[in-house]
Image 1 (cartoon, rainbow, N blue to C red):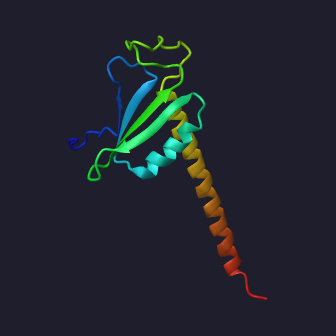
Image 2 (tube, rainbow, N blue to C red):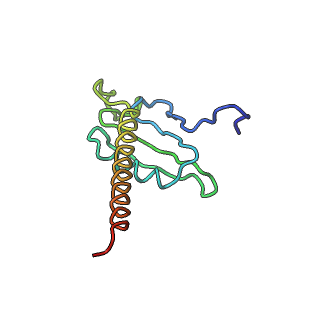
Image 3 (cartoon, helix red, strand yellow):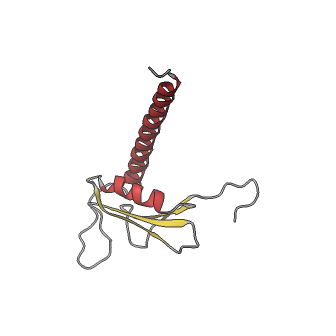
Length: 129
């Protein structure tokens, strides 16, 4: 638990031994399926992403483990894997793009909703003919 006045960590980056920056698990605290599924959808549209998924560790915990693996990255030190490609995208990049795109979509939905509510209220104030 974070002490009073201390900022609580909301995102951790976990890398397995022997993996490169193209295979990363991000632990997102105080999040659930709402962010997990929509962010996974946005990230999977990225052509540089080979795998993206998330798990909720336990129903009583409010955190998700969010895994991203990009193309061109392989586990090093395995018998059948070629070395990592120098042009592979680090996993943090699709995460940033996915979060930005998701924010933009949410902002568009909010703007559309507010415009329609305003239009509806204006119609309600007009006298009936």
